[in-house]
Image (cartoon, rainbow, N blue to C red; front, top):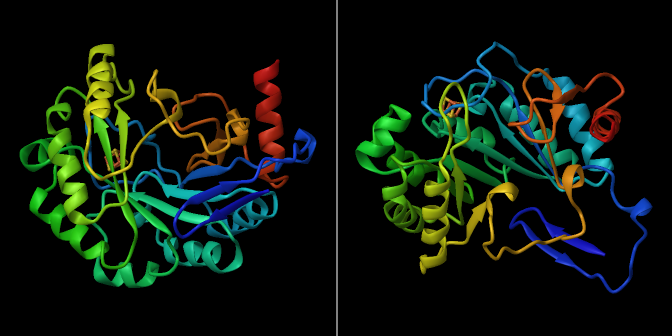
Length: 290
Ligand code: SF4
């Protein structure tokens, strides 16, 4: 029996009874959904596709219903920049009120006006804010005033549980202490560390940068839980809530052109058509087997 609290992300697994795999939920535990490719920033490490694409809100609501019925635990809205998606409040509210899914969003936060925060209040369980450094490091990476980011964090922290996401590369690595301090002082619940991926001619984080990141994690003694992507943990000790679930049972990504992939970095995908997400998932699984 698995209990999950979408408000806090707490997982409790009672595994005394060995349930046959055929009875496990078919849906991935977590599905990230790029609502739109549109973004008003131009971060140098961005890997989001730059072609214009946006998901249809009615289809999105149908997918949310399907994922909920099939045992998915949470969805995460991203992009592009999800706050540029006009029907974000309606779709998030549909998920919050019509499903038991945990609803999260990853944003640069610069468009989170008091009006939008009000519209999303109660509809999002967690907000992830992209912060890759402090002061001029942040401004060089994101091209927006750091002082404005700090104001946005203070404002959104009054309404949402939130965490910081930090892209780690040679420019941002020296700022990790400062980012962790900022996260803790702003009231963040966690710090997600994301080694930069190869994209658009940039090579991504080198083995040296990743080794330095792992060393920083090993030495960190602050109050924040640290999180890493599944493929980025190396030999670090990590907490695995459901260790026997792997691959597409764990996570999948739907891009703004409605293509289902293993992650946003994978190029192989399957279109999600009228047959739904689980059918696309089966086809994607089959593709990988062939
Ligand atoms: S905020 Fe995100 S989507 Fe927008 S340019 Fe930066 S990395 Fe890309």
